[in-house]
Image (cartoon, rainbow over all chains, first blue to last red):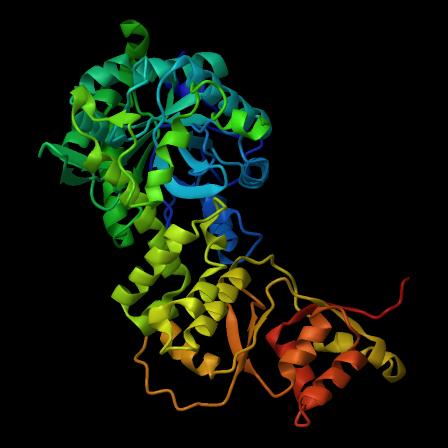
Length: 308
Length: 268
C-alpha cells in the first residue's frame, strides 16, 4: 500500500469543512501565534500548519481564536506531545478525552503522537523520554496506541524518537520495535528525519541503514528540524534535538533520498524555540516544497511498490 | 497493589524502566541510572544529563513564560535560580503547562532571597490569574440593560453569574501599579503608589484586563462571585469600607465584564 493512500488526508467521514484542501504532497510549518498577523496578511493559501495539541487544551480564549482562523484556511496537523504513550502506566483518561475533543473540533488532516513517555506516577517531566525495546514494552505501547486510536476513531501517526542513551535491557532494534507497533495497531508513522540523524549520530549507526530498515511504506508525514551539538563523555559528537534553528544539510540530504524513493509525503518544518520571523520559517517550508514537487510524478511514487 | 503493577514496580522488572529512569531527572545529586548506557558500553553521564537539562530548563522556561513581570522585577538570573528550586521541589502534575505554577507565588513568599521584595508573591498571583483568564471559556459579558430591567424592589435579591475569566487578587501592596509597567514592553518608571491595591482580572473579549479595585470593591465582588445576593454584597462592602461607592462599583463591574448573566432569583 502506498504511503499516500495508507493514511487519511481528510476526515474519515469525508466531511472536511471548506475551504480546506488536501495535505497530500505539501510542506508545512509549526504554527506560532506570533506569526498569525503575517500569515493572515499574506492571504496566500498553500501548505499546512501543525500545532502541539496541549497548547489548545484550555477552555477558550486567544489560542482557540487563532487556531480557528488557521483551520478555516489551511489543513491542520494535530501533534500531541504529552500522551506518554511510551510509558508503562495507564494513559491519563482526562488527557485522552481532551485530545479526542480537539481532534473532533478541528478535524485535523493528520493526528500524531510520540514513541516516548513524559509522565511518571503524577509527575509531568515535559520531555520526550526514552524506553527500552522489549516484548513487554512493545505490548504496552501497542495497547496505548490502540487506546488512543479507539478514542479518536482514526489511526494516528507515531513519531520515531531522538535518543541520547540506550537501555541495557533492550532486546530489539528501534525499527523492529516500530514495525511491531504498526503490525499490532495499524497505526501510521511520522518519520522525523532530524531524529533519525540525531539518534544515528549519537548511537554510532548509519542513518541510511536505519531508513532502509524503517517501515517507510507506513509513513504519513515527515518532520524536518534543526539540532544543536554537544559532546558525550568520550568527547564524541552528541546531537541534541533542539528545534531552534534551520534544518541541517545532512537532514536535507536524507529528505531528498526518502522523497525520491517514496514520493511527496506531507512534510513539516518544526521550529519551536529561537523562533524566526515568518518569512524565514516559510522559506524553510518552501525549500521542502521544492524537493517534494521535484518528486511529485506518479512514476517515482510507484517505486515504492517496485522496491518491495 | 494495582497501581504499582501498572507502573512496572511489581511486574518482575519487565516494565520498571520509568521507575529506574525518573528519580534522578530532578535530582542533580543522584547518579546516572544504571539501567542506561551509551552505545558500545560508552558512558551515559553526559547523555543522561541531556534529559536532566531538558526537563529542568524547559520547566524553568515554562515558569518564565507564565511569570514575565515577576522575572522582570527580579532579573533573569535571580528568577531562574528561584524557579530551579521550585521546579525541583514541585514539578508539574498536569501535562498542560499552562496549569503549572499555582504553587509558585506561595514558594516566592517563603523564598529566603526574595524577602526584600514582599510584594513579589502578589505580582506572581496576578500573573497566574492572568493566564487563567487567558485560557478561560469564551462567554458574553453582562449587558448594562440586563440590570436596568430588574424592578427596583427585586434588585437586592439579584444574584450574578461570574464570567469564567474573572479573578480577584487582594494585596497589601500597590500590586497593580507594580504589575502593569513590569508586564508591558516599555520602561518602568519609579513606582510612587504606596496604598494597598486589590486587582481585578477579567477577559471580556480576547484581551485580558487587569485593573485596581476601589475601596470595598474586592469584598463586594467576592461576595457576588460566591453567589450571594446584591443586598448581601452591598452590606459586606459597606462594613469593610465606609468609602464604598455602590453606583461606581456596579458601573465598573459591568464595564470590566466580571459577570456573564443575572440570576434574578426567579426559578421559572
